[in-house]
Image (tube, rainbow, N blue to C red; front, side, top):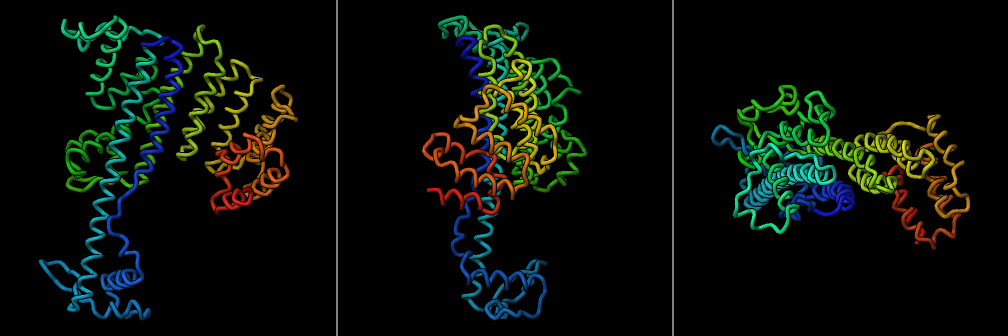
Length: 441
């Protein structure tokens, strides 16, 4: 174990790694195998003809589709109606299309399964690592009464110090907790940080049920080919089972919508752990620059924008801004945390253009010492204000006008960072921002 200062910094690093890894997992792509063929005009016309036959259509207007349609027959085989053709070439092309779609379906299921199993491992390891750092910093005496930490004489000889032995015992104990159902071990880990997190009616209970279902889904994918069984039905909330349309013998759904909602539940719980640990860290006398630590956490939180996790962003930016307010309500750190809370709300579609609290935030900030009208960062602050007080169209117009007129900033390091600010995602839906950036170089 390192120093307390090292452990404090590692809490921020663990959180940063968690959010960064979510971006990596989210981008796991489906391998579409031989889809070069099915993207050709010939194959597209044949697929349209096949679909028309399946729908029972008798007349096709498109001549390119009709030439295939007329050569396709509906054949009954083993009480099923299948498509076939006496034309060997058409029959061969149809077989290739069906085969490619089968391969794509298999590939899609593999990718979805990989994303969910990777997310489960990341979630579990992140919570364990956060608790390890919490114990290192606050020395909770968490393993004192645990039979899971008995060490043999042979194991004793493998460690050079009592500290290393304590770390081994701690990790062994925490890992033993994860052998229980996820609904139990999340609560047990939370209890180590704050008893409130270890209560059934505590702050993580709403997400807990969904995460429990997520791990049951992971088990189905790993051990049962994704097919719903009695174990799944017996261990999940009936309401969630209905939402998932799950029934015995049916493959469990694992599409992108499910993955995204599961990510949000996992992030909510990790955020609660980070918030509680941060509260405790800020009370330490050993931590000299408390605002610096909050800025490290805030920097990690910016990845929430990239993952479209706006609601978790609202929660954690709000909690961190409350902490910063208690330390120094006149600080730049407090202002930026408060701004990011509003920006997260803006990303959810909320209209803040007439919100007086937003206007008051910038009015207050302009009276602070760190708001320097001659400073190079003033460009960023002006754009930040526009992003909350103007409509999307007005924001684009005014922000681009300001950037063009600020010639000096082009040669400044701030300029490069400016163009990558998350706020510009608000106006990049129709590529206007990308086109504007291209004209600057």
